[in-house]
Image (cartoon, rainbow, N blue to C red):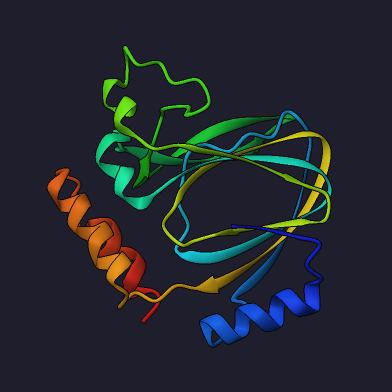
Length: 185
């Protein structure tokens, strides 16, 4: 849902009425053409407002997890080494989706053709409602400034149970859900 010219106060009042709580976090995003996210999902209801520039989202419903070929990769972080940086691997594994929905390589990810990507452009003064668990990839044009508000999702909702069921059917198990829901109880 794209909301045009919604003010911060009205948006926050509306969201608090709908979700029954204040935002869990308010984030400031500043980037340019080089900033590109990988495909991911958030366990938050998200109101994403562009203050300057243009953000481009590729959105996919939670049920598309069956065709996104999620894999487990070792977690890593950048560490300073002298005047540069190096990648330091960690013991923890994290779920990762390699496919680029804006330019999928169907030879490497043939099941992606079953996905339902929605392409959305959010311009200055517009707000996108991004439901929890929706997969997304984000890019921007030029210098872009945005603010988003994360509201806790309802882990007892039918949407979460459907998402978990599809993960199970796809052979992805529930280890991710156990880990994430334990921290939100």
